[in-house]
Image 1 (cartoon, helix red, strand yellow):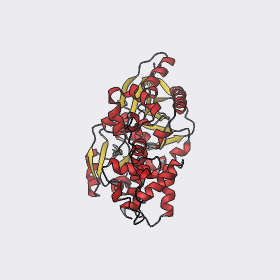
Image 2: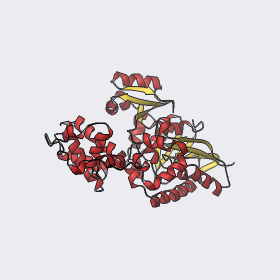
Image 3: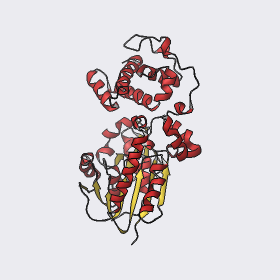
Image 4: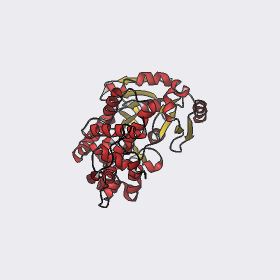
Length: 383
């Protein structure tokens, strides 16, 4: 496909997404109807689409319109590319520019330039202070690809060497001693020997940092209360913990037994946890604001009502998880959120309800630290 044809495909997919079709579904449906498109074409189109979703407001301003065509025009203008060189109407590319394809002449408001919903910007200002603009500007770009080295099977140096043998370049990440950032050939990771042999898993560096900040869990009985796909459960098992994984939607854990087998660890999956544990991890449902580089649709779907619902749910989960913490044990609360109302304030609110216990080991990360935005804090239960 020509560069212009890729852009036209991105326009068509974006129009489906703007009509409320989920991005992954829109991309999959397009690929099924265009089987002639090669893997490089599909990857380039996917990148165009997600770049436009991340920067929907600023690209629409630069494109002078809010449909897929406007977003792609904004994508090019933001990159300093003259759209006339690609909007030629030739080779299945976008039609030539017209009068309604001109940029919005008005100054770009702050929330538009930062690609942030208007209602959310004050909340982010309260949470991030002087770093708000820098964080939101970082969120306009693709997230790096990070790997977690399986401590049970390899050192970071050994895993990096094995990846290099497959042509995959990496570098160590300071956030966690298990973290590698892929700097070249990221799309080869799942076909690598290191992945097949369970030496690595795809996992954000900040998520790894949350697990690294936990106390010594070697030999400890641990419950991952909101396990999802099980990335953190695997990381805790690699640190020597006896891990039980639970999720309100058990289907989310369907791949965990296979992943655990590949990693050489054992994890028990349960629909209803029983008894008490040395440590309970509650990585709760949240706004996902810290991970909007990876899942940008969530930024535009979040509403004040939905945020309020999430805050209530978080307190309910904390109460349920607390019941499974043994006397003298601890509860680890985590979110991939940038918002204080889901982080420090949520922990403080819960600590008050259980007798004013002070949280410890608090970790508050933003994309400026290198990974996703992530929060973690411990609450200890008295003996």
